[in-house]
Image (cartoon, rainbow, N blue to C red):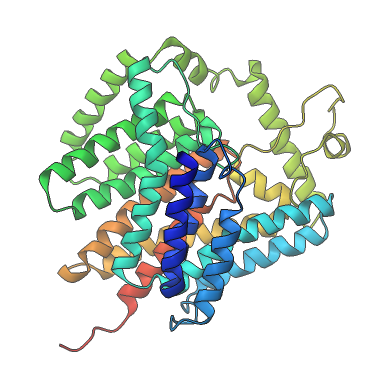
Length: 416
C-alpha cells in the first residue's frame, strides 16, 4: 500500500512537472530529503525516481518559458567554481574510479540547486520549497521527537535509509537547521490553531535532536541558543526561558545522554574521538602534500598508512567526521577556502538583506526569512564541525535561497 501511494504521488508530481518545471524541483527535493521510496517495502524501494524526475524536469525546463539565466551574483560564481574545483580534484584523486562515481553523485545534488537559483525567483515558489523541506525533514523530526519523549530519551532516532541523514547525528543537525525555517513559516500562518500546531512541531524537533545523543547536535544547539540570546532585544526574558527549558531538559534526559556528552571532555579515552583526531591529522597532512587534496573517498587504510605516522593496520580508518576537515582532505586548501568563503558570504548576505529591508513593510517576509536562514546556517557550521556532511543538499539549498532573497531586495521597485 505504501509503495502504491508513493508511486501515485510521484506520478502526479511528474505530470505537473511537464507544464510547470519548478514542480519537478519540489518533487526532486521531496525525494532527496524524505526519501519516501526508502520507507517502502516493495517494488518502489529501488525505483530510480530521482533520476526520472531529474531527467523530466530538465527536459521540461528546456522547452518552457522559464528564465534561462542564473542570478548575476558573485556567490553563484563561487558555487560553480567550487563544483568545478571538485571535478578537478577528482581527476587527481587517489582512487579516481570511485571518486568519479561519487562526483557524479555530488553533481546530482548540485543540479537541482542550480535550477532552484534559476526558477525560484518569487515568494510563492520559495515558500513552496520551504514547505517541502520542512515537511520532509519534519516527518522524521516530529515522529522522532514524540518517540524520544515517550521513551524518556533512551533510544536514538535515525533518518531515511541510504541517505545523507540516515545516521542519528546527521539527522539531528538537519532537524536543527530546519527548526528556524519552521519558526519563520509559523509566523506566515493565518490561523491560531495552525500556529499552535507548528509550535508543537518545533518543540518535538528540538527533543528529537537532543534525544539523538549527538555531540554535533549539542554543539549546534549551544551555538544557535547563544546567538539567539545575543541577538534578542529582550535578553532577560529569553535568558530566563532558556534556563527553565534547560532545567526541565536536564531532569528529562537519561544517564546515557550525559555519558555521551562527557566524552567531549574525556576525548583522550574515547576511541571514536581519537579516530576523528587521526582523521583530521590525515586530512591536514594530505592537503599539505597535495595541491588537489586526495579526492573523494580518500579515507582508506592505505592512505592512513602513507600519510599518518604511527597508524597501524589494526586501527580503523575513519572518515573526517567534520565538514571542514572532510573538504580539506578531499579538495585541499583551495577547496576548503572556497567552501568557507561560500558560507561566509551567505551569512554576510543575510545581514545585508535585513538592513536593506529595514522600514520596508512589503519586504518584511524577506527580512524575517533571512534572520532564520542565518540561524540555520549557524546550526550547520557548528554542528558540522563533528559530522561529514559537506555535500548534504540542505545547506546548499539554503544558500541558494539566500541568493534569491538578495536578488529580490536588489531588484528596482516596480512603478505603481
